[in-house]
Length: 385
Image (cartoon, rainbow, N blue to C red; front, side, top):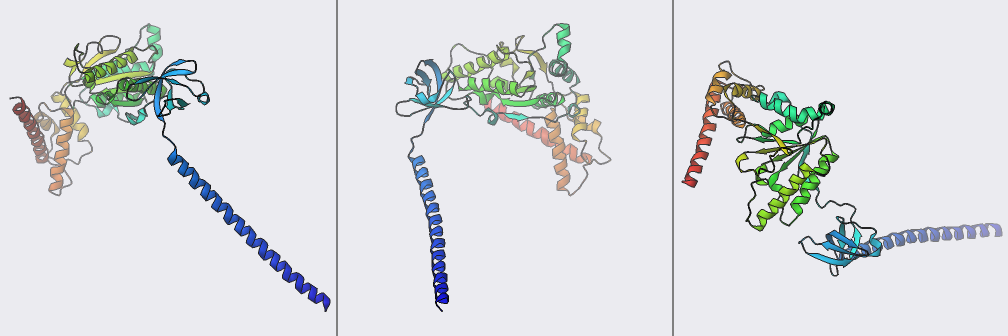
């Protein structure tokens, strides 16, 4: 009887101890989770209380001191923190806003994420997509494609291939298409830049962007830098101008320096495009820079027929469509306008619920493009009298 009583008491005691132990473990776990939550909240609050640091450029180093340049252009002589490590001119650093002491060095020396400013791609435009420009295609192949594909040929002959070319002509004649086609044929990285985007607000920023674009091109070589609307940056310089014009001039001089370059361009080619060759500065089109000037004219009758065949190749054409006669009706049309006429012809067929395009659709499309051109010309005349 005594033994049974003892066993019962022991079982009750074990049950109480087990229950207490499990409750204690659960409370400890909950306590640990609450402590972690509180610590994370404190960290977040500390982040909100932290003073933001200013991004500056190092201009020069003098022992434990340095000259920095602020984003607004002002320069200051400041102290370098011991935790900052070794600095050199050109580094990007973080400084305290109050006394401008250099706190630490940023891991990147680039001020701009340059790939967000330019279009970097591997084009897939074949030479067959370009019609009526056989002579121009041949010249571009000699200047851009041949040096990239067979550099040893130029070494044997003992000449240096041109660094770049300038494509000039009226809008819509195929300048950008030619640049993409040569990039595709050489399997090069195509870096497209609009010249007006290189002009920045603060002094020196545009020049830095030009420098970083060429650095990116060298890193991704073989590559082609295509600068569209070059006249926005490389217009003829004048002696007297506003501060904005002087900044454009500084950016332009950086472009000339990069093309001439202390560092060879090697497998980097520069292609410029403009509608206004007459206003370009002579410095950019002299031999040694954009050596070869290639005029892209409006297509003649045979060229218009080739372009029309390219753009209508995937279209469902009726039996009465004679492309030769239609190309004769497209007098003074550029390649872009021929494409626009084909698109308009397709719209006229869609409006009449047809799946094939007949001659009448093309004629109406051509007429519509002509009317739009005449309207633009009239606006121009009214504007200038």
